[in-house]
Image 1: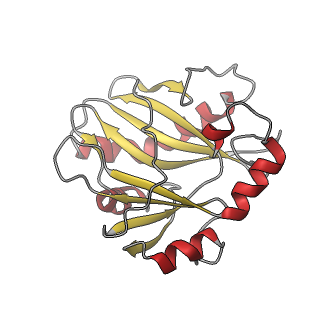
Image 2: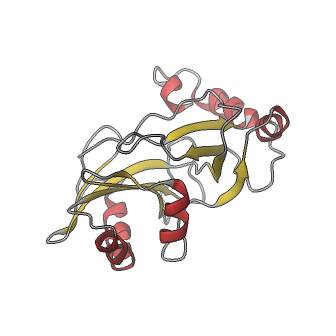
Length: 203
């Protein structure tokens, strides 16, 4: 099962992008096939099952969404697919989660031998069917907008910031994706987890 691509932090200023809220949770991947439905689950780095103390809850939450997604998968002609979700709760912060109810939010879909669903198509196909990352803006990330995001003043941006996506120039290529984070969120992570060896991965 493919891993979710790393998102760069370098802003591409001259590119028209779809800007989504950056959800502060953990990335979960789920593999789907027409015969087995969603049957394999993992974080960015490992697979897990329903007995996983941290992420096992995500499996039933994702399976509940299958009835809403399968029609689109078939419409797109997917032989199989990997759906990427963000797993989070009210108290989730920088990939750490409290013992509380959680939800899963669809952020991307990759079809076997077809690549990622383009951001414009993703919004049109999935946003009315299930909980997805909210589209808050379309256009270029100008220096003014970038400063607003980093200062926590851009409308619709989460405390963490935003993710920006543009369709790839060539078929089969990955979408052009970059993130812009709120500086206050970065400072809060450093204050709480500054001694962690994997701090760079969290940020």
